[in-house]
Image 1 (tube, each protein chain N blue to C red):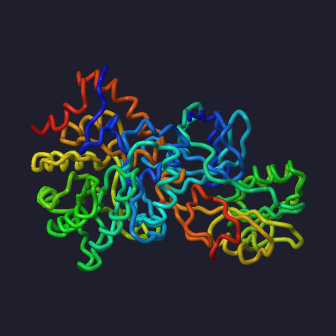
Image 2 (cartoon, rainbow over the protein chains, first blue to last red):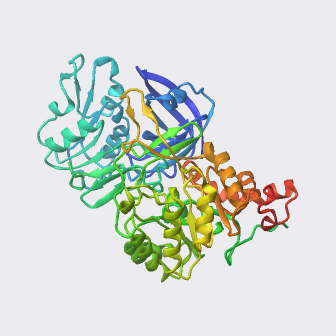
Length: 239
Length: 304
């Protein structure tokens, strides 16, 4: 499927916001991702959706290697070949009235669409975001514009509370939804006692369940992060 | 009208395009993208006697013009495949499929093939000899002509189905191994498996793959695959399935000119889930452009 680049601009050091116009009818849930073909690179790059509507979608990605670096240099008006609507996404059915939404660094973007969806179903999410330092913070305004409590933590204390996002978690929530680097997810897994869902990341090739490149071991046997995930229930994980 | 059909060991294929093992699962994910009945056949995920989790992640690395994988033969084991995957496959693919079999001892190959022999849906057994022989010091079966022949002979004895031995390219002389398999009774040969390679992460200064090394596939290996198919075609009389970096209809034709009766498509499926469908659709137009009336007639044309 072809998508046109509407915007591709830095919003924090090495972090870019990519607005795309194109078909999003296959996107079913927040936490799903797409696979972008970048000219000159063999494998597609998996990037989760930050937000979408019937006309297109917003992605926020970190330039972490040559592929995403090349993506960040692509110009407005250019076309991208994308496989969209991949992965399971978050299941919002048992979120409860006060779900915790916990994000760290490059894992924050998909939580924006998640928070919106939770609000739309009448829940009052509490958003907890963690970054390394003030200059790396992004999307904070967008979350605050949703009119829900937003707690911020930075490792060096240059914005919000000093420490990891898990140090900033409030009491009294019904469920949690997390996305972020592995150490953060593992800390969330140990800290949060309610039911919860965590979005994992793995190097993958196809992104749609064929190559077995991203398999992890779970309590229900081997699972593909791209197809059976990327979102897993806490009780499925073996940490 | 051009004719795409080929005869592979008595199996009449509508066209020579076959997704390669390990790049197509059991076909289910692809059947959600398109009706896979347009394919000649497909070779399903490599199957071992017992379930295997495979290697730790990362299992995938990118390379110029291709990719490395070290999945490590993750599969649910042959009994699960027979009880669950084959019946499910029947609901979305109605032609004979190719069962790709791996093993770590001759006995394991034999037992897995014996179990699959009873399955009507399986048209061909494709025996992957790139696995290490646990009783033979860990050397891959496919790196020694006598070991390769031993597997071919043992498997041939327990099945009525055509046996294709899938050859490893990581050898000094693929032709001698191909001949040994032919002499041992193999009905055909599949080549090439992936080329052993590696990448290093410059940030961690460690191999990208958790396994250290992995198999290279994708367009980068296409000329190597062509060369090996060409060499083997000239040395044996049994039919070949050619594979390695095939990405488009023109590649299929090139592979057939080097001697392949059927052509498998691997990594291309992973970057474009429609790759095989597009190849099947492109073939008639490419054939017409090139003045080819029948694919069966061009097999080995460049190797004569």
